[in-house]
Length: 485
Image (cartoon, rainbow, N blue to C red; front, side, top):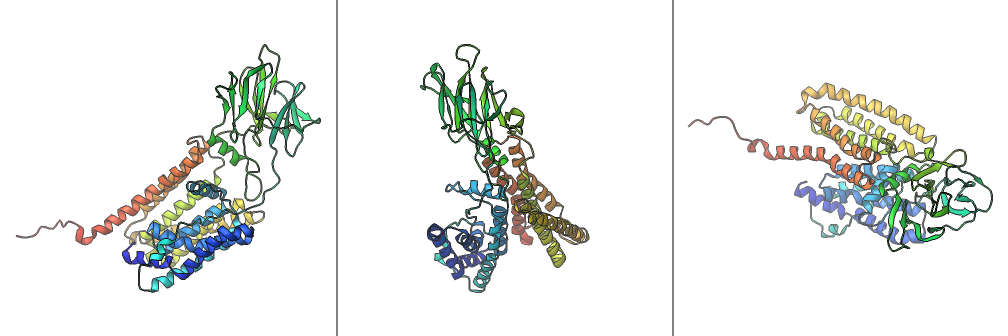
C-alpha cells in the first residue's frame, strides 16, 4: 500500500460515517444490549461492526479497500453461517477476552451495511489525502458479535449417580433412570426413587482412605489411597478429545449448538464381591453417558444404548478421521478457490476477459458459499441453498475453466502457478483439521493456528515474489548486452 493509499485509509477511518458507526457500536454493546437485550440490539452491533471493520482491516493488513470489504464480508459470512467459523472465531477472540461466538444465519441480513463502508471509502478517496490523527483512535472491533440463539430440547444427559441397595442408579434427563445390579455389565430402566443429589467424591466402603473425585468441568476422575494427601489421575479424556465430543453432541437445531457439555457430573462407589476392597466406580458424564471402573480396575466409557441402557458399543469415538469437519472442508475449498481466482486475475485473465471471468468467478464463489452455509439452514432453505450452490458452482466453474483455456496463451502467466498455490493453500487449511479429527493435534485451537499459518504460507510466498519482481523492474535488472568500449 502506497503512502497515498495509506492516507486515504486513514481518511476512511476518520470519515463521519465510520466514526458514527463506531460510536453506535460502543453505545450498543456497552449500554443498549444491557438495557434491551434481544435481536434488534444484536443486529445493530452487526451493522455497525460491518461499517467499522473494513477500514480497520485495510489499515492493519495494508490492503486495498475493495479487498478489505470483501475480506470482511467473507469472514462475517463464515462466522455467522457455519458452526466451524463461529468456533474458530470464539477461540481466536478468546485470546484477548473470554468470548463465545454463535453461528446465526439471520445475522447475514446486516451484510448490506458493507455498502455504507464502500460509500464512505469512495467519498474519502475523492478528498485530498490528509492524515487524520483521530483515525488512529479506532480500536480493533469485534465484528463477529456474540448473539443469542434458541436451542432444541436437550438430548439425554447423565447428571447424577448413586448406590441404592444392590443397584447403581444413573439419573438421566428427559428419559427414565437406568440401573445396574451386576457391576455395570448390564443396565435396565429404573422406576423407583431417582432424586439423588450429585456427589463429586466418594470413598470405597470400609476404606475411608481410598477415595475418588471427579475433575470438575472435565471428563476425568482422580484417586487417592492415603486419605487425600496425594491425588493421581485414575481416568481421563483429554481436553482436545472432550472438545471433539462436544462437537459430536451438538444439538439438532439449525445452529447445532451443544445442549449439554460432556463433563463429569457425579460419581458413586459400590463394593462388590471378589475380595477385600473390591469395588466399582460409576461416573455420570452428561451427554457422553457414563464411565465405569470394574472390579479389576479397568475403565470403560459407555454410551446411551437404544434399549434404554448403556453399552461400550454406543460410546462416541474419540477419534474419527474425516468426520465432524464438514464445515472445515468447505471453508478450505472456499479459501483455495478465492486464492485461485485472485491469482488468475493477477496473471492477466481478468484483464483479457473482464466480464466473463468476473461473472464466472463470482458465480463460483457464491455457489461455494451456499454450500458452506446450507447445513445450518432449516428445511427447506438448506436444500434450496444446496441446489442453488450446486448450479452456481457448476456454471461458475465451467466459465472459469473456459476463460482459462481460451486466454492462457495470451497472458503473462498461464495460471499454473496460481493453481498450484491454491492447491497447497487447500491442503494447508484442511490438513490440520483432518489431523485433529484423527487426534493429532489434540486441541482444536492448535488446528486453527496451524491452518492459519500453513494456509497463508503459499499465498504469502506468491505475493512476496510478485512484490520483489515488481520492485526489480526493468531498471533494476542486470543487462546481459555487452557495452562496446
